Image (cartoon, rainbow, N blue to C red; front, side):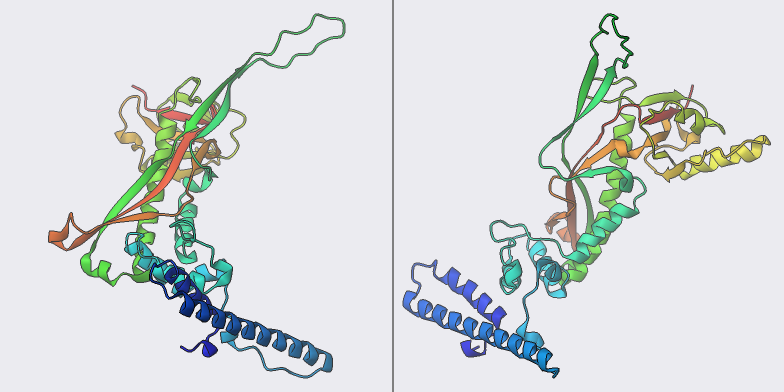
Length: 388
């Protein structure tokens, strides 16, 4: 393309190419310098044309006449939000990921052609996720009954959250009486370390080689769901593995040994701290069904055995019928006491293994998110265990 025919996006693309060429030891400095000058002149012409059109538009408004609208090709620059929502960007992003994050030529070309976004990814190998893929992760997060209630954070490194183990109560100090004893405050701190939460699946070599944004769409859908489901199971483990009494590094979870009955949830609620406000009961569907059946079979005029508490379902706990003695079959409490930290955001990173199952024409796709999940507030949950 001749320089006189170039638009702004073409100029930016060629300028970036020249910048790379100038780094070479055998670069033709004189020729490239001349071309840069011509590009700058063409850029000035385009800007002058835009200014002229603006003046014409202003005059038209004053005179009440119409002016020909600016052609689409005269405005090709997009901000980063528009760019991330484009099909072109999604396809380039997919190509970059499928190259094992090595070939970013298409991404850089698109970003360079859009001046508002040209600095993104310039100093490292990180590019913003296309809106379509980002929304899939957010949807998986929002659709999970457990994870959409925890407290999210996006802090770099390990996170320490302080909590109160014990303290003396405030007192009334009557005038003239002896000074009250100094308050005794015992504090603890739970440290939340981020680990890779992973899930993998196999795709055929035919699917993998087709690639593109449609392929990325599929694996994001599947892996985002699986990864978020795994994080919900980690939440369950964090509550189950907390001690009955707070230590310097672990807040307490109240313990209740009780057979399933119409008053089980009500009794469990009575063991919670007053700070627990958005109370849920986590159990399997089978256990919930068994509670409701007890009300029917008892023949008693009892109220709602769920006590209006929101029931969340999980397969990370056993059914009451299958639970062993001393095993938790229900968790009752406030999920805001769970902190989920994502040091690198909620973006899913991928690894593609074409070798381990090559004989079966399969490619292993591993998705991972760096996340730390921890229970942070004492007595905001109760473990309900099956008695002996």
